[in-house]
Amino acid sequence: MPRETAEYPGVSYVMPVLNEVEHIEAAILSLTGQDYPGECEIVLALGPSVDGTNRVIEEMAKADPRIRSIENELGSTPGGLNAAIRASHFPIVVRVDAHSVLPPNYTRIAVETLLRTGADNVGGIMKAEGVTPFERAVAHAYGSKAGLGGTPHHVGGKEGPAETAYLGTFQRHRLLEVGLFDEGIKRGQDWELNRRLRATGGTVWFTPDLEVVYRPRSSLVKLIRQFVATGIWRGELARRFPSENGLRYFVPPLAVIGVVLGLVLGTIGAIAGTWLVFAYLVPALYAFFVVVATIPVLGSEGIRAALWHLVALPCIHFGWGAGFVLGYFKLSRNITAHTGR
Image: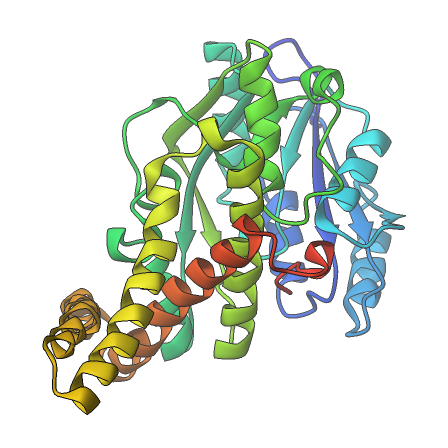
């Protein structure tokens, strides 16, 4: 039987859950199927789901005593994570997403890396995988430099200290020391928590040995909603912590502004018959960029996924970029309402 040892301390999986009936069973089974030799518990913070998610969890908890649920009174991701962490018992906390599927060796590698490096948080690669042509198109965008900018937790890289990490395996006492997740931040809370860990002398560690399967949103509406919300919160965080945001965060909003201005000025130039018509070059160059970025999708995923990629990639860029502008300039009336679900 698994037991807690100095080499393999007990692990608490924490997961906020809200309306995830499509994904929750696979996510939990990936935790119960871990090859980790130490003890574990699975703490699920349940929001007010209306799609049958909580019934699925109730049945799974009856079959496995390691699974238990608590109420997420706030209903938000950071609120659920904090509630689950407070209810956990073991010294290692593994943050899990209901859209993620952990490979069987994930926890063992993560804990071994955590103990070997002395880091406060260890994370790996978010390996997006889709089933439908639309999801495969989105997954390709996630894992390409043209899509989300080529950060290590999306496309891989060398092991070492990092700015942030996908999901994360944490030293529980360090989470408590820095005050857990900021419940006022509905998206980007992982980055902000890692910022505090680093600011207090800790280390966030990336290793490509960890790969987590991530299921993208299943429709264009859900995708746009997700990236607008993500962009709004990234803009908010860039405004709050200006010295801690790299230039790459400003590329999408600048691209959005450039394309929109190009269309407006180009149209004015076309109507007036002036040189402003050359402003159309900016959106034309962006369209060319999208087409070139789609060529690999055509070869690997087929024509239907490629056609969806032509739509999904601009939606990701423009959703994120427009959201960033709204968040950065405080143009969103109720920022806490933007969760991207």
